[in-house]
Image: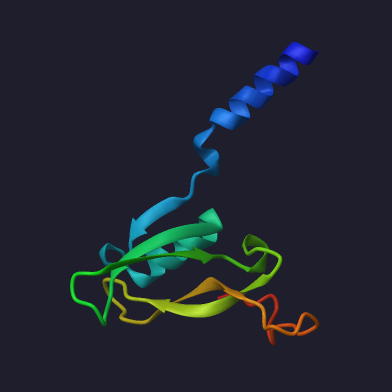
Length: 110
């Protein structure tokens, strides 16, 4: 029994299933980007900065609050995609300083 538990633990530790997918947002349509977030729960999108020429930005986008840390909530964000300059997605944002404050829409989905 101990041997089987060790083997299972080793397989889980070596599994790539915990890796987060990375995508180039400008090579995807808005619908495809949103579908990737919905199906994988959390992804990293890469896109160029609008303010600094040549700078590539990376950020993590999530399906809902359950993919955020305990001190964060899912807030609306926008990424540039192939067909939409402002494709709506969700990104984790820190909760307000007031520890009793709650976000207005705690389980926002898009």
